[in-house]
Length: 262
Length: 255
Image (cartoon, rainbow over all chains, first blue to last red; front, side, top):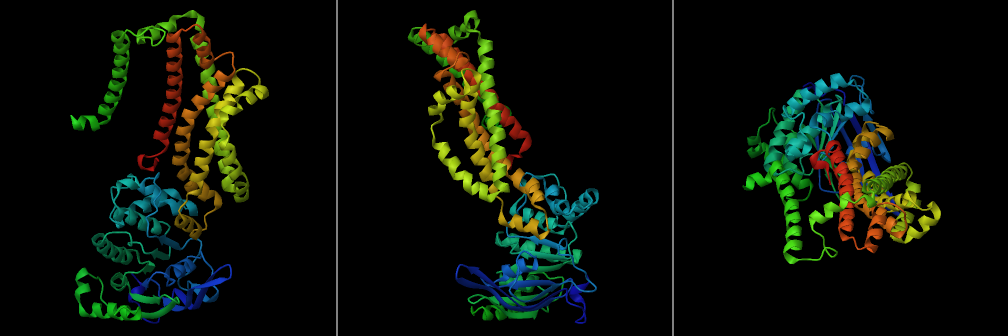
């Protein structure tokens, strides 16, 4: 609500400079990511796009504090947007990863439980978030009673329950069918607008990256490195017919070219 | 008709019907086939043997029931606790688990004579026999269930700096329950077999012991009755496990 249309004067929320990571297994070294440098403004939705093995998921794990890095600096938070690594990260994965034995609302509450937040307030917020993701009335259902797309909505609600400043999404719609995926893209843009979160969205869908992103960071594989980083200057709210427009096509062509897929 | 069969009431009715049909088939087979009583008694003869005062049915049911339930409960406690120890210490698991797989290969029946030497005659060696057979499926299944945590769920907990204990209580342990119950179901059947084999090998009480006694006098109805009672004890145990599962695990999470 605030950051994505603010001016260039805004302080970055995430600042990456020359980030590299090498995986070592025995004597072999495998470069997972090299020389990643980009900023994310508060409230931005940034897409990280690239083929498998380009390091975009590794980068997400570095941002989540799950992996260290070998070179460069990673700074999250600024004077105006303080960041607590223990409680300001929400995560959504390709699989919904809902706990089968918990009802939907109780699944959404998991991060609040882990953080020891006051549960009465969290339950209230959980209901609001389920309404936000379009799952009102499903609070007491079990995950198996929901479709894949609906489960992923619940996973998004779960990633927001503790009101994190940063939401990291790792190909969240990758397992959904094409139509559901498009629908979820629209939903995500709406949720992002309404929640005002900073979102880093990893995908290998080029059209998805452009459609969702305020900015796109492109990675290439073999060797894994960051190839480009540019703003997507397309108006909000975005609708699906944007995809048929020439300026949308120009962005996707730019990415295809970077990936050598012209 | 088809819808009725698919409904819960329909399925229960069909189950009861199948059992009654078996009883009827049994009765007709004996009656029409003129099978001698000592080869196969009729249902009526079989139930009549319950009235015989010599066999002390209720006492023997209690003995065998104690062995089965006792051995089973012990197996549950020991199996789950050992599996829990494994999750808390990787090195312990690496050390002990292969050993347990080998021990599991020992035919437990072969241990019967040893158990009598170690635990004397009576209820205890047979309880231990039931225990020794039942403990492995529970232990191995539980250990496996505790290991099966999606790595990304681990990431989720770690990204929120969740503790090891939180991971265990909120994800790992409830996630393992379906596996625990899969092991418990197998173990319930094995525990019954274990106790009875124990009684066959050497005992002075219990339904298995009773069967050997009446075999000598060719009282086949009593043998049938003993088998029926053993089956009923087994069904009581199995039913208890199913009931517990019904209340603890939602439908889809069951294995």
